[in-house]
Image (cartoon, rainbow, N blue to C red; front, side):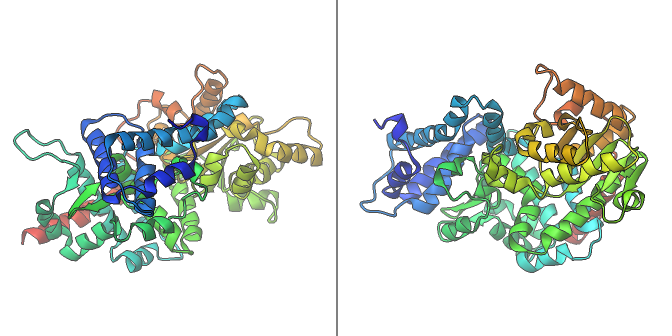
Length: 494
């Protein structure tokens, strides 16, 4: 038995190198598939990284050995132990904030789920909102699918794998059955279905190339068990002429984020265009809330054209800066070290220390101010106070330069929230359940007590019992899908 302290990435990789690739993939696929179908909780992130390493390293060295359960369980347990290399450092240092931040980055994306509003949001950003650059045309040129076609097929497949059928009908078994495809082909066309399934699939033939292209992968093998899985881009596996869905939670993430992830990796013009559209999307929410607000242009007129300002300020107390970004992998793993500062300094840190503080100081604002830094994906910070070590020097420098004795915008008053949380916030206000000021004050108060403190801003909104989604911009965007799908149904029945 290898000692806990001797477990390393190299040790695990060397074990995998001598094993049958097909057998190792089969063991892992069956472990994940059975847990998914039975609703069992497993360390899914461990199985996903073993699946990745099986494609990359299995059968690299001879002799090739068959895989038995004892060998398989040893490797899986070794992957679990490997993670203690990262966690033990935080435990020894008593750095529990870092410990839990790493856990959330590793695991929370697998718990997102997907709902109609997630599809509507994508239609709104990528199709309804106009920009300078045609994102849909770019996506189609690279995938042979329009964005709406991709979304609609994803909706249908998601419904297929999650439907509850009567006992006398064949249940979902982890695979997309070939005999179930003709109705999809009738609706979307055979070529579109082939393009969709090919785009999201991985096989023994192309796995190494696709995995090595994945830009979110961490170079250090020791850290790879913590990364967002490559299978979020390739949720389908071609195994023995069957199309296996890696896990429905993985596919849910694909449904929500594939377009963003794919274009970010494959189109250098996407990020700039997305940022502009994301800001327009947030403005739709502000208009829906009926709150009074000033734009970036209004603020510059007020305090100076060359001044650093935020995208919006609501009712002179709530500063909003839009950053259509996601957490960088290395910052997710080192959330409170110098490397994280480098990863965040031009986005979240800049939004707070260069823009928000400047507006609070120079614009006409309330005595007590709050801030929202809006990101496309969730970062899972309780508040900016989680990043105190990273921004402390910037705050001290700002106070020194402006002869301030106290920080005019306390870190605990500023939150980094994802776009889902933003829409829920707007829906809460539209339903008349609370105002922006009441919600911000309530969240700050709750976080000041360890018993009511929550890791996610969105979780604080659970106490407001909102109605069914009624946000105009989501309903109108979803109507584009309904109109398109009705047309497909009519054409398909002819």
